Image 1 (cartoon, rainbow, N blue to C red):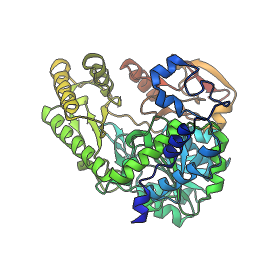
Image 2: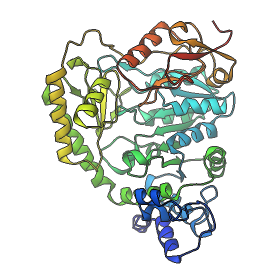
Image 3: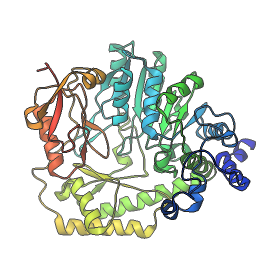
Image 4: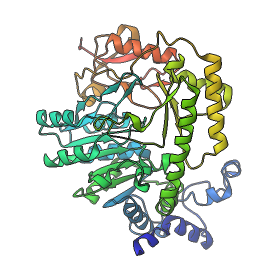
Length: 486
């Protein structure tokens, strides 16, 4: 009972409120001096916001070595998430993923991971020098989406690479698909490997009994959790959870290699307040979200042509479970790529969804949505079908292309390189990324062979209006390739 009651506290918010009442004269940074030095910014963001945009000091603790209110807030978060410890991350979940990989692996050490990881995981390989062992995800050809990792394929990767230090799992994917995380975790631990989980899209798993298992609940060692997505905190705020025998002190040292020494109290207090809200009200909050997503899914499927998919996809392995808060909708049967539906919704109906790719769209549903908004989305999709539906021939029928890995990401990224026109680069080894963002899963990563199939897919994405990123050339017309690799 005391454990539950303690979740009523928000130590960082309480300390900030106390500090405001002290009327301290600031001769420290930030230079806007509680907003007085930047009237336009204060008018835009509000005085309440500016007065708590403060620097680390004794009454407010320090993120790089917390001993008081931040430490207490981290302990409350750990308790709420069922972890040994929780670190407040203000460089986004990207920094949490990188800290996991850099904690588990040193240069030259192997990590098993699915190839459909977020770019942050491969960036971590560039930073650390760790070597990826990719488990290629299955593909649902009808929907054009990558799936989870098959347990047998993970087992095979372990047999072939018994010296790997860790396994990284997505829980869930952007589309809501979960691997058999408990089986993979048990398998990894039997072979002395750490289990790292990218839960950027899985915050809500910790606070509702009707959703898939969370990383901490199955005994994973570390998890990166995007509180700012389904958890309600401010953008860029995140948590890194640790469990089992992972050293809190060592992980904090790793975090402090890259995380700012000027931790934002706006971000930290938002983590603190959001954790409190989820701990006290999460079951009800996400019951509501599940209900809204299910209602909208059913209404979209009544339109015809669209397919809002859900738990019926589960197969006990590569789709072991499904996140029913995710409103993922397949669009190709109305003859439109998802990215085109995304653009039409935004440009003609003033509806901003999370992303559109070649075959699907994702509308992110949260407790902040209203029933009226859901009806507006359904009505817009029905009208788009009526106005724009066409023959589906000529559309790509898949998204995942199995990579040919030639060099490690670090070797390729830092190698001597030359710039080629994208359409002349087939056969060479890429020194950089190419990806559509969102979702930020690389089509091509450093160290991978460029093929005609990949080039055709990149051009198709560009033609359909996907937002392409990753290359030094902002126009994505040229690509850096490794010298002397043919």
